[in-house]
Every structure is written in structure tokens, then in C-alpha cells.
Length: 102
Figure 1 (cartoon, one colour):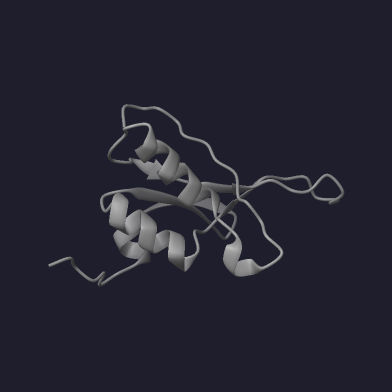
Figure 2 (cartoon, helix red, strand yellow):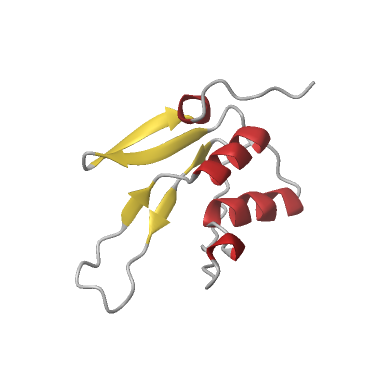
């Protein structure tokens, strides 16, 4: 992509398996719009209005999102929050020894 930011929301469902993560929606939206290649992905948790702590938090992608990112953006960076600091890592560091398509 050429510096464009693609945003999405996490769609929570009562049955957890039906839930769709924001990363998956953002990737799908970008692909639908004809974009290829992703430089960096970050997921941010916005607190509910009734929560006392209203700080935004960077969250790590779940295992399924890691697989999806690895499939569609194998050279992508992912931002994480580790010990209160934002860290930039590669998707291959988060999902090492990825299977290969033959």
C-alpha cells in the first residue's frame, strides 16, 4: 500500500467462534479495494464507555489473525505493546516456521 491507512472494528458475537477480529476485516477491506501488500498492522483496544480506565491499548493479534497476516502480508510488521512499550516486530517472528504453500 502507498501509505494509506485502513481502519476496521472488531465485531464481537455472543458465540465466540463467530467473532471477527478487526485485523481480518481490515485485510479483507483492503483486498476488496484492490490494495496489495501491507507495511504495518496494529490492533488497538478502545475501552467501553463504562470502564474506569479510558486508555487506548495496543493488543497482540490472535493466532488466527497471525496466520491471516502471514498469508496475505508475509513481510509485514506488527506493532505490539510489551511491558508498556510499543515494539515493532515482523509477522515471521510472531509465527515462526510458517508452513509453506507448495
